[in-house]
Length: 243
Image (cartoon, rainbow, N blue to C red):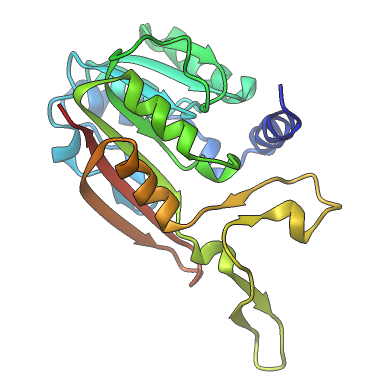
């Protein structure tokens, strides 16, 4: 395994150990709502639009880098045939526990999102990729693999941080501080803090949007979510594999 992958795995495992907010699994109430036909997948303070997932029952879904006991169990409760692939054993363990407790037939796979060679062509109807592409130095191989393993007409939903998250740094001053655009894109955290073990990559919108289009996806959905911090702007896209 490449060194950056080993470090990313270690970093995510550490976040799970320290109970980072986004590592919390689905609640029993959320699971029951999904069983009752009220599936809700969060996108920060918004939801994935219901119409994007309206026909999920009976469909083959890949939760790509999507472990943590949240999306996969909820989708399984909604009637989807779910596979979850993730690099972190500790995140995958959350899915194992919920799947066992809820008797959910979730296929759990440990692996790197850049390499989906274990899956055949046209294997899935849906791929759901929660925020994780910032841990990959080159996202085009991910898009190529997603296009390959999706069925014709299949849907790819991905979430990612807007480049402004990486362009701006916070500057402290006597007025309370401000953000200043100082970093060029693409961005790598190791270039700015070589002493840190944290590895994160900032990608351009050309890479995110253009990369999907170049791989053969047709974009048909786009949503943004602005958090309290002015640079915490995230987006979600919906794309379809052309038939």
